[in-house]
Image 1 (cartoon, rainbow, N blue to C red):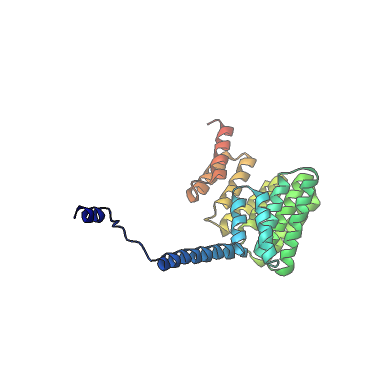
Image 2 (image 1 turned 90 degrees about the vertical axis):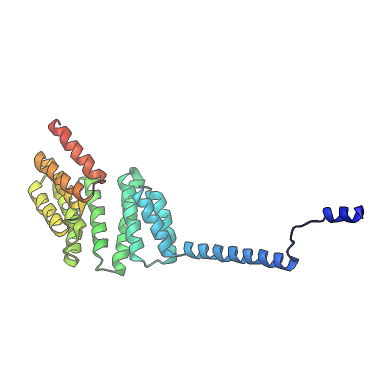
Length: 249
């Protein structure tokens, strides 16, 4: 009798799943993982995936890494104008921040991307603006009136297509401001705020021209307008602070 009680007391009470159920559950996990991996790989092989990564890297100022991501996007869809314009912009920023042959090569690559985009879509105002920026920045480095004129021609081409293009008006204002032609610069800056009253960058462009003219009161008011629209805009807050330093506040 004690023997029987001893055997009962030592008996295991856990429930063991049949082997077939264990195998089936493990198989389901493997299938789920395979589907997940396939989904991730499929997403990574899309143009939009690499375009979004490239544009995010550009916002962070990581232009070389942005080009690498945009290269992947172009390898998938070579005729995508949005990707070409984004990569051209990244190359232009690399050129602005570099020197020597790397500086020249990056400008050339930027122009090539914008020209490629325009071959695909000659009516892309954004591509004309991008090309205009490249010539503007080249002109600033070389102090070349010819490049400034080429830049203005590209901005004008963009405005023929899209008269409300704020960046084209800002681009024209910047060129005349760099030549100390502030009356002309202010005319185009006014046009930028007219077509884009809720765009903080239009007001920032205008404020910087007022500051360059020595009209500090108007500069501060205009920076304030930009900050009303975008209170976290560093260009507006830094520009306003610089003007206050100038007037001794």
